[in-house]
Image (cartoon, one colour):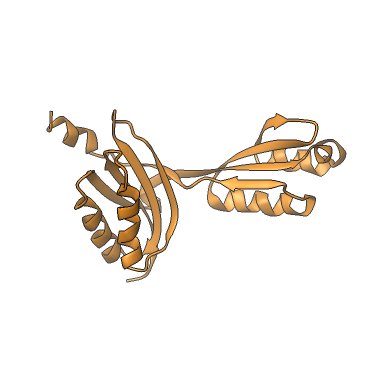
Length: 173
């Protein structure tokens, strides 16, 4: 089996220490987490972890099984890239004078379908949502002009197929 990118979705109660225990599952197996995002889910009082890893399907099945053994975890799923719709978000902070002095900067912003979030005397901030490759491409275009600050979120995703988590939770009521 060859390594592939998998997105693991974990629905859980939001308790202290769970993130540490989940990351320990990956640490024990020497599997690097490529991206991690935790947020509220579509279900009230339930958090959703989105964890991206590169491994074999056998290992991801094993990991999901171990994650589900955690008391606070309600259900965990894994999907391939083909089974999900996903994006990342990035913010670029760049010196303000470049926005007005370098026509190429304006073209890069327009061509990349980025958004100017704020402009101040000293800097402006650009937001870009998209695939990792699109954000990396934009980074490379801005790099020669000087990036004051850069941050990229972890992957956020939804599955293409219906996830039965809501039905599962209804059975507990």
